[in-house]
Length: 195
Image 1 (tube, one colour):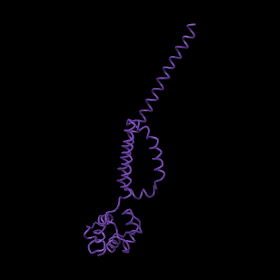
Image 2 (cartoon, rainbow, N blue to C red):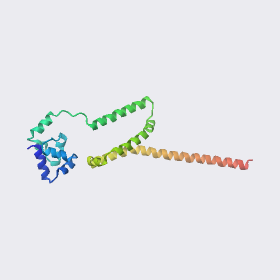
Image 3 (spheres, one colour):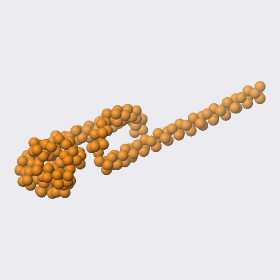
Image 4 (tube, rainbow, N blue to C red):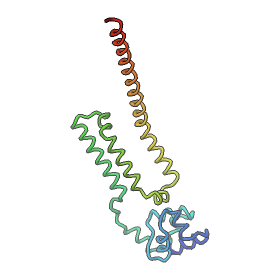
């Protein structure tokens, strides 16, 4: 049986619409329609997801579909995905930044101080450009939890340092004002009583 027929049969057995299946696979309904009408073939990743979703082995899912098997066998490796390019770019920029910091003999705390404002500006920019509706459809609950934990672990040292610096600054100001206050009282006392 061709995979197009298999997908349609399995979907209909579960009383799912094409939109229901598309939502479960995080793809468009049009993709499901193209697969079922045999105008496009699912990627290997999507075939694996379909097998898991329908509780079928890959063999059961693609057996008899020579066109799909030939497509997998002759498929050339894909060029780097956008995510791979992004990760490599971030790693490269981080290494360049580290080397610049070394060349300028900057300590880690100085480097962090210099990068704090650009980080905040870029983070706000990123948050404003994200399509949150699409992001909600793409990310699973597990991914959101892991991402939240990573962000929390990343922010804890910064928040701790900021609070520590704020308290230290306030305390230094209080101590300075006390010192200035005592000096003022002494000068007042001296001017009144030691004329």
